[in-house]
Image (cartoon, rainbow, N blue to C red; front, side):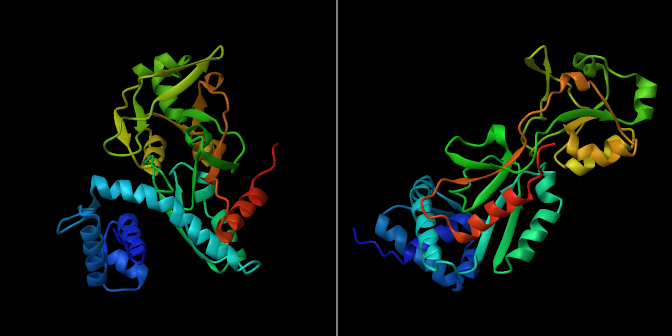
Length: 299
């Protein structure tokens, strides 16, 4: 089997963009050239790599296996070429996958200051709560809570410890009473969060005498939009549950008050994570250094 290595970037672009037009734009070629390149690669391999419909492009099982095999070596190759520049300014496209609850990262100042310091880097932030392999998906790094990061990743602390809180308006607690134990939440109207339409509502987790447990609150209102959840709670829609950082401005102003604080100890916060590569791209190194300098000092 003779492989045309020029077809590898074409395949990876299609796999990562999920669209022939977007892949063509990324490569600076025509859509027809991308389609023909994929067809040639499939002829060489003797198997379909891409499933095409009028609306979407998806990898077949064989295509997914090929993508998983090729993505890491190609990332190493790109990093090696970027490092050839030596002390040149970091540049290029930096793709980051960030969970929607990472308020410290998404609030703006960190990204704005990084862009100002490194004008040669183009930053693409995808906000997603899906759990996936960032390397296989073509991302340089991700931001998530430390407890859900894969063990083979390198993680750099982004925030101090975090804590989840139970909140509602003072008026809600006045009318319906303040729960004294998490299990009393089942008698309250609750506003829950889920990461995606197909996922179950996020569990409300607590700790008592060092033993963790969760409560099935069965929210009357559930959403995958964190901001809608906050606005609903502010409107008196019920009790809700999320990271304290999410509610801090409203707690400070007295618009929301907390309950059950004794059952909610702190835990490790958010981390910037990335694969352990021998040749790290200067653009990723620049982001890591910026995060380390930006991170709040422990109080």
